Length: 306
Length: 306
View 1 (cartoon, rainbow over the protein chains, first blue to last red):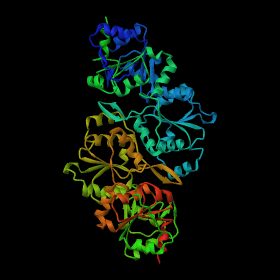
View 2: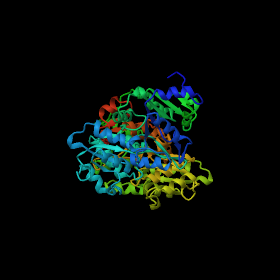
View 3: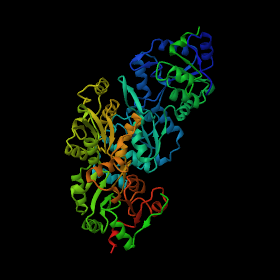
View 4: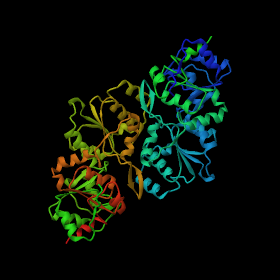
């Protein structure tokens, strides 16, 4: 932690050696490949260089509102070619965690979701039954009758087969969904969050993120959810479960010391690479508490390796 | 804090002496006067005894969804006679704080509210202009256009005269209201909460309380609101501002050590009186960190004073 990171911009030999050390590059996206609607010059060429050298490229995103297929479209709209297989989102991470890691009793396999369609698509792809989410039946006001039915545990409102509550960013959050999620967890459901980012960049400013959707439940329950997004290692475990890579030969690339770089360090990856096109500054990387193995002014500086 | 409270049940002389020490009795309601829909036997007789001895009785409630007039009706429905003047709710407390204590610049006097009609009635009674709340215009989904308008500070969506955001329990909470409240505070509005109770008893179980409505904003903003409910002293200041009582001659009566009794102790009232008909136990009162001056099995034990 006390070692200074290596500054690689302009250091051709250093860059070549760095790239050679790894088989897999995990990329944070916003602030690394693009900012807002603007793709950084050289992003595609850099990804192409890595792919041409046989590196596995993985786009790691905490965005839970989009499925991998949706996210591929987003990458395309930004002019970045990708395959669905290269994308790892927090909704996919959560679905894998539920279907492959959680050992749910046979009669407790349903998931009550707070979130948008991305979560539902990924749960469906893993054959996980779910309710809540975008179902219009839950987009209504809570009624006096609902309180009584919830208190009585009416199985038509509180499905007894729900064993998991999964909370992601939901632009249609309402009191009814929160009340149901609250009571499912009180009755024993596992409390999961796709990610706990408090805010979300959009339109050049910030809005409430997925973590802010879990916040009412955290306060009312007095409990934290297991988060399946960065920097939580449940996401790294899910990525490893899918790509079966050697952690010592993997590198996490990101713009935020306290999430991306921390995610790579705590995951004991062989390397972490910071870029200065996002949140963290040169000073953060050089002298902050969470320092990458190396850093660059910008990702496309990797092109200067020969 | 280390002194043991006096147990007054059955101690006629002790009770008479205790009552004589005070001119004002502040009552927590649920768990003291009633539980759920069930008024405890002797509640009215006890209140009558106090009134007949010239004591000022004040019902102190964190319920923000009701105005004082609404709460009087609630008391009546439980068979407890009262006057509006005896009622002090967190929505009234917040309105008084805004109108009489906060010194808002002339062009920043509007309040954006998250909450139900009780808040609006009390703001109206204090001539405080407000928006948000129960206005149907805010009961809709957020649109892509809204993000841009919020980012651009469109004055038709973000009223430049809003100087306060006041958050109470809102059964119609949605992403649009949260996004607007978030941006108002980011632009400098004072962040207030009627109260921060995480849960609310209803129908024999618990639901999300007003504190859970502030929780997404607290997480996204990284800031806590000033709370105008128990146990925060802003509420005691507001009560004192209205009733002009001598704190040394006032007693707080409640069932919860960590809110009601704490409220009275931190407010440096002359006395605090616990009752065992609610949340806290004999052990809590006898040996817990927050101990009342005295306690009773039940409120109506005060009738045994002669």
